[in-house]
Amino acid sequence: MPRFVRLVACCLVFCAVAALAQGTSAPGGAVVGLNYSEPSLAFQVAPGQVVSLMVYGLDYRVTQPVQASGPSLPYSLAGFSVIFRGPVFPPQFPEPPNVPVPMLGIEQTACLTASIGPCATLTNIVIQVPYESLPDCIVCLGPPSARYFLISDNGQVKATVAVDVPGDQIHVITSQDSTFQPFQSPTQLILWSKAIFHGDGTPVDSATAGEELVAYAFGLGLTDPSVKTGQKTPVSGVSFDPTKPLDDYGIKLYLDFRPNAPPSRPPVMAPNSALVAAKYIGLVGGSVGLYQVNFTVPPVPAGTPPCNHGDIQSNLTVNLVGTWSFDGGGICVSPR
Image: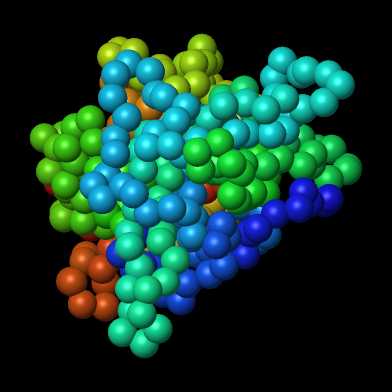
């Protein structure tokens, strides 16, 4: 796929700021780090997804995190701004437009190491991918159209990041997500690992069959009706159509009762019952780009071993499955 001239070494999404601040610095304006999915030159973001762009080398002037406030997100914070360039819906001709990107927050970490002394500042720019960005065609034969984020400092472009835009790029949030704290915490969640909670808002240590749980995620893609980019979700929330199949931008729930199972899709030959109905899958009211999934824990299959907090850390993996992506988190479940 053709690539716009860029200053990108690689991309980081949902990674801890403190850990990167201790790493080797990169040339000014480069975007560096690790993706939570398979690393590539172009990282993947879904329409409406909240992501972090980690940029080395921008001017250091933000000593405390700057968080957007008000019902609408701004397009500039502390002199920094981001533009999305690429095909959008509805299409515009003859050239792809420059779409301002709403920003949730800015955080900068001054870099200083004992070995080399001062090094490039690390800037965490938390943005929402425009809902108008046109998703890749999953059945088309040709490569997807080129798309970019242009990162500016006081009006001057300092870094360019190439992206692909699948219809979904699911990520169940964790305590390490630089997108979540302190920039967005509508319910002040206390995160330990994957964000799966009891009905009273406490993190799941051990759940019971028949209990209703809640998982939180980013990157599930477009709802119908959609929410305007940069606007908070209505308090009542906006849900996905539970009848939509996966090949029609649907989102499904797959509960995997295997010890220590990693996130996965159901096996190809699995029965349709492997994809269970959730009580609610949709956007969280009062937030931006944050999704929640409410579901009831089914009866534990016979022969499922209990957690022992030794070699069996989880006996149920809660998976969210979309057309393009999946993610999940493991919990412990005991019979009722």
